[in-house]
Image (cartoon, rainbow, N blue to C red; front, side, top):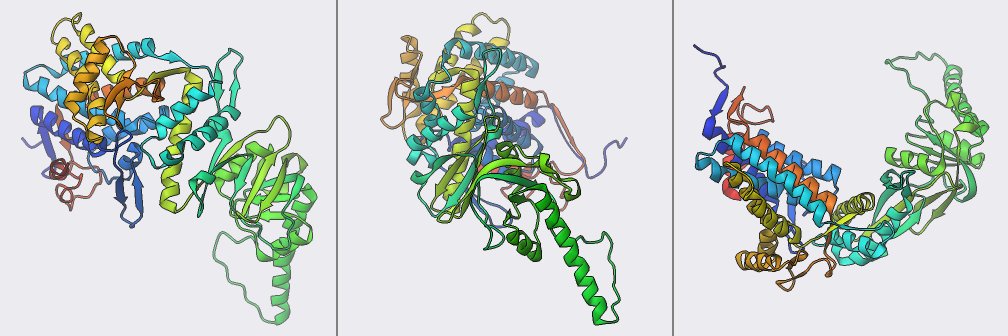
Length: 547
């Protein structure tokens, strides 16, 4: 009896588990070398030839041309970690890969996957409880500790070279967009914080500015560029001659008819400009185009206009100025306008827009770097640090880094395993071993002996040194908290939860049925994917061998 189509593939039982585990581990091993202060960078070249140089886990996995269903599940771990915690993506993916590696050893001992899954669930729940027990409270106004959190997040990235300056800017930025709620908790709204980048300058010249920074030029040289209290119009409609929805042909028999046609277009533009004038606007930020003739009329009226403003900038200006985003000039009135101070920096060729009044607020972090690649990686590092500091302010808990928390959790999980009955006990111990991957990889990436390092760390924690972590620069075990290596508890809890759930999801699969080859790209011509790539069975095998 034929049930499946002739092009379909099916992998069952132990083969399916081995396939999935191999795919997941290949992804985890791809980012392991980037972990820690001594982690290395990856160069990623996309199909268009664009180059990205980074050691940010989620960026690497997004840019990689992954074409394997199981591997994509592990990429989701990094994306979830990035969305929920802002940092710790490499840690989460590495732990997920190690959990599956340890699970494979248990499966080979004829332990059923459901027993392993139950054990992992117990261990993950216990680990999160212990994280909360170990974590130390941090006040939202403790700037020194928050700076350490930011510096720890940036260490090992290109932003590390100026981490003290950047950490200060980040903490001040988060402080300005944090408010205390009625129930006494703190809420950080990063929607009111914008990041702008500029090349050609040193990263040490980065600065924090109140209000918005718009990297655009005025559309006409005769326009004023400075206002103390300007009425600001945010426009999402082109100030251009309206075009018909369908193709039309106009037959002109005389020059007079042509002139009438041109006069009508000019009148249409004049009417649009007059609507802007009648609204009382002094400054117009337009998301779309502005016709050359309209630019001339606006300059004559003394109105500053900026065209092709980014959508994200328009949304941020809405927060800064209190203006509404207008999509139809026919309905615009004075109530749609916002108020702001606008000035032009001719040296940097930037507009600074600062809100007026207590009900509008927002800040811009202006990052500078020598080249596009430098400033892009700087922005990624700063964005992670911003998310981590914001999460710390909101959550109020921090931990010692440098592998300290992982070794302590592993020790406590092994004690907990003694109270777990059945084969789940072995899974809890395997979970503890997987957590110790973090200090091992930190040591490996720093050129240290991972076994000796782990032995020293275990000994320190057995002596009750809960905050003992690895100093990758000296190779010594020391109090990571006192050394300024501080991580947020929320990111660690999220990493443990994401890694364990992804590993359990993979372990629960015992049958893979694919309509074509085992890839997600839908290209049936490339059987098994490109050599060494991530397509089908052969593609993943090729990548696994290359790791």
